[in-house]
Amino acid sequence: MIDAAALAGALSTVFAVENLFFLCLGVVIGILAGILPGINAAIGITLVIPFTYGMEPVTALLMALGLWGGENYGGSVTSILVRTPGAASGAATIFDGHPLHEQGHSGKALGISCIASATGWFISTIILVLLAIPIAAFALRFGPAEYFAVGIFGLSMVSAVSGENLLKGFIATVVGLLLVTVGTDPFSGLPRFTFGQIELFEGIDFLIVMIGVFALSEVLVQASRAAAEAERGAQRYSAELPSWAEIRSVIPTVLRSSVLGTFVGSAPGAGGSIAAFIAYGQAKNFSRHPERFGKGSLEGIAAPESANNATEGGALIPLLTLGVPGSGAAAVILAVMIINGIQPGPQVFEEQPVLVYSLFIGLAIGAFFLLFAGLFAARWLIYAVHTPRPYLVTGITGIACMGGLAISSSIFDLRLAVLFGLIGYLMRRCGFPAAPLVLAMVLGFLIETSLRRAMITADGDWTTFLTRPISATLLALAVASFFWPIVKGIRDRRRIQAAGRG
Image (tube, rainbow, N blue to C red; front, side, top):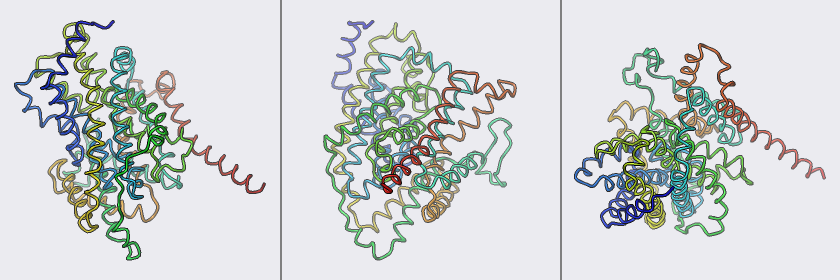
């Protein structure tokens, strides 16, 4: 039941000039922060917390939420333009965003990314308003077995992101899972595969690997191109935004991925990167043109971006209803609420309805502002890649190195990034896809810890994964998602062969 008085109060609160200004300022700061590798939403919000002292609680929260949404989109900008994800959640956007940019359609890539991001944000807000309490109750049923099944479901997308060589995709996946085991054992506390290096005790940061295999490997590819490709230095990147027909073509993908991202985000611990990879794989499975994925598919950009931004509304569901943060950024939002004397939970809907409605309305307005700000900035962002190739390569190298240092201010991490840059370059030369390796690193820790917790809880009984309805359903979906692209590919090849004989 909607409280009309509280809704009216929330409208007047949000549309106050001060609140609108700081909401929009948060979105702009978030976009800029997302462009910088190593600065995720949690770090960005943490950095602005001191500037919120003295603000009204709703003003501080609107600014923080705007920054969160802006950062989710900002991470895709460098993914598309320079193959360097600004945040972990932007990794899946590289697969089709950068190829489309290389084809000269930079404006379309950025436009679809922005539209999908804003739509995912808005749809997740609607779901948050309508279904927050039942979704939160459902998310509470997730235990270690269910989280393990979520991880396996995400990992089943390896067949969708491996390209044409599934065997090489499997090998890259295994390497990614092995890299996750480096560091201190999360249960015993003993070091694993550290080889006496203290710097490896905390493991290999996923972002370090991502910067290496995507950004620095791209630098090496650019530097090693033959003189026959020199004319590409004069490549003009179009700022033309996507047409209405192109936007309409991705609407089903955006809607499906937004709902998926909201539900994944509502499960504490499942972040935007997991939602983005799952959405990408599902988009390829449902697409009428799966052969375009990895080559500049608009659906391949829309799916991860809408799912990634939808996790914001999803993560707010357990935060507002139960006081449980669903992600690192949500944990910082929780800190902002506590600093301002707000204790989230069921009581906040009864005791402070104006505040809750203000957040809902602010989220919706923030999505629209992100749409306009992102589309306006697209043209100016494209100008940056019109610089001569030597300067562009130098800039990519600088951004990548800055991202490597920003994670822990460690020269060792920077050296690791360079090492993975060499590995990524060799993978590209030998035809090994980087996407499965990154996917495995995103999901590996969740899979390992959830598997071991589930086995401890069940006293070593493996059937616990099959006797729990949610985990059994997710595992069944994982099997279907893994084999569907393979079966579909075999069927299509047989159809082509039959047509050729006919």
